[in-house]
Amino acid sequence: MNDNGRQHVYIRYTEVWPNGMRDALFARLKSNGKFHCDSDAGYVQKARLESTMPVNMRERLATEGVKKYYARDDEATHESTLDGLPKKVLDDGDEDINNQLWDLYGAWPTTSAPVRVSTKLTWPLPFSQVHALLMGVGWSAEDIEAMETALFHEEDSGRRDGCGAEQVTWPDIQHVMRKAVCKSGRGDEWTQELEAAYSALTQKIRLSLKIERHKLAGLMKGSWRMYCKPLDDDEFSYGFIVGSVDDKNLTFTAHSRAEGRYKIEDGRLEYNNSNGRQHVYIQYTEVWPNGLRDKLFARLKWNGKFHCDSDAGYVQKARHLITMPKSVEQKMGVEGVKKYYALDDDALAD
Image (cartoon, rainbow, N blue to C red; front, side, top):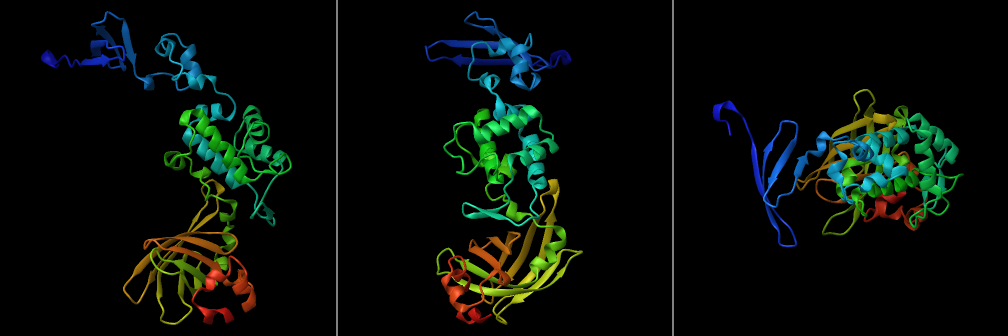
């Protein structure tokens, strides 16, 4: 209502309860995000926007004028009972936790030779070194103790065999932090929404993506094999050669191994070192004689491999030739290698 320029807002609605009660409510909204209801049932009812309250639930429950809004609502006050990593997630918030994890990822050393843990090559650390890295990204002693408890002492059916004080891997950290986020009140399952909020915790973020800037051009140049599986056709393979890399402008030129089979255009690289992550993104377009133009995007790995996102929807994986066995027998006999020569026997002699 704006009679006489008064700018008043009136709220009317009816609460319908399972016991059959219908309570018609009328209120005047205030500029501070509050309203006091006139209730047909005769109840005293006051409402307040949660955004006007302290962020931390413990503060809400300790603040006069606020705690009454949570009287006998155990579900809403669940977070007040949290401790350990779930409490840290709740206290710091999604954005800060995600940034802290990216900082930890960036600080994790990968310049030494990797070791095989389970089926993957990676860079495990003793917890004493993880402790130092966590201090470096701003975690308190209490927070670090909570991480240690989550890694080694909590009952956890998903814990990696071998995870212990002498060997902690980046996926171990991801695992316990995903659990902590869920326990902070997000439900039992890791969802796409959480995946978007916590980019550092996605499974595809591995230490194998970290590449020192000065190694980029050398890693890109040379002969590559590409494995391709169309959506509705048989798998095949082909080769391409990266002839030059402009290390300053981060562009590259490349061509098909078999002359005239297809062309490569618009070769571009991006070096993303936010939070020290050292990631390399590859983009280029394959131009085929049938008119298909397939734009590819990939993250380069330290070991001379990349997995493409293809506009055409194909499964495409590339591997540098220098990482392949030398003999024809090994190329066709080693799992993880022979697919790169599918339907391209002529290339086996390379």
